[in-house]
Length: 149
Image (cartoon, rainbow, N blue to C red):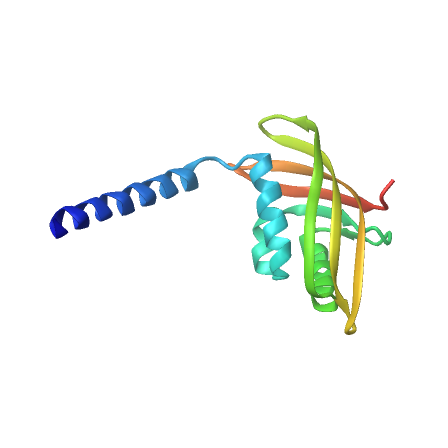
């Protein structure tokens, strides 16, 4: 009986591992990008965000500041990560305006909250992002954040 239980348990473990490996080997989709990007931003760690950023990326924040190139985007994101403690960030209301095998454009709502200088702070707005498929991995080419309309 114990042997059958052990064999059954091992079979389930191997099945789960194979399903996980199969999911990892599937090509990334634009929707996968959004999920990974939201999770990466929530970590407040650049090394989680960096693989999702195209070398020629440009980002415009809702305060109007513009950051061109991956290095400038890195500096801007790291400033925000350092400024906003315990940030919670979410993306919702996605609308795909264009999507093919190489490019995708989507609009969305965003919300964030956290603490700045020990005080509660939050914001929200609308964003438009453009993605490019680089060798099976979708990367952010441009992001423009603005006020909620």
